[in-house]
Length: 116
Image: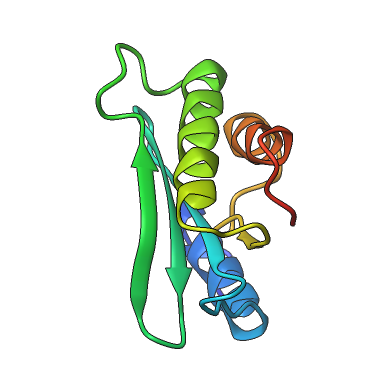
């Protein structure tokens, strides 16, 4: 990676490095997080079957780019996971720092009973 690589290119490199180790299955799916300027998205992915088991986003919320919205997304995703019988996940922060909205989403999932 060169010195002139953009912030997103560096994030994608971190994401690729982590994705080599992180693997989701039907019993323990990967909780994938994507963060944009205005919204946050989370998915439970079964990498063995290449299938999304559950997804939640802040698209329908009034303001989607803050910690409160990330918390709501985490609670919604944990509720969907419980409905599908999922108790444990592998957390994939997508190359983002574990801080702010990503941290709020993860903590809300943990409070709702998901185990990382």
